[in-house]
Length: 141
Image 1: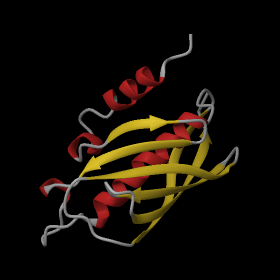
Image 2: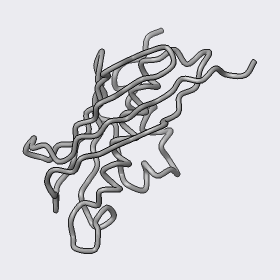
Image 3: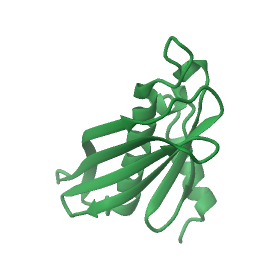
Image 4: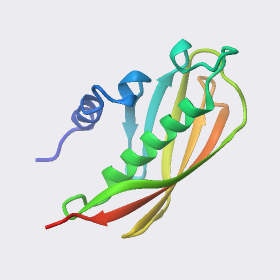
């Protein structure tokens, strides 16, 4: 039985209870054949002291979205996925609203995966451009 998109998103959001994703109020909102989108509110929980979005919170959103994409699009019956490197270029600051992360594969190999995650604001302007490398490791038998 194939799950509906709503069921997949509901499950993804439900397993984030009592995690960093819940603390930062990150929610998965869409996915397709080659992408995943999540959003995070910009408020005092994710501010740096001067009242703008903290780069670390942005990177947490990027890694969450990219990792979920790797989990969704790889066969997890024999492997588990871990992030091994993330980088971010922060382009503009955000003081309110939401930021959205869209993760897309640059490379989807059997062992390593490379994802590009674009973080945008409510008006679609690029806030940060991130790159995540993940590795698929064999599960012990």
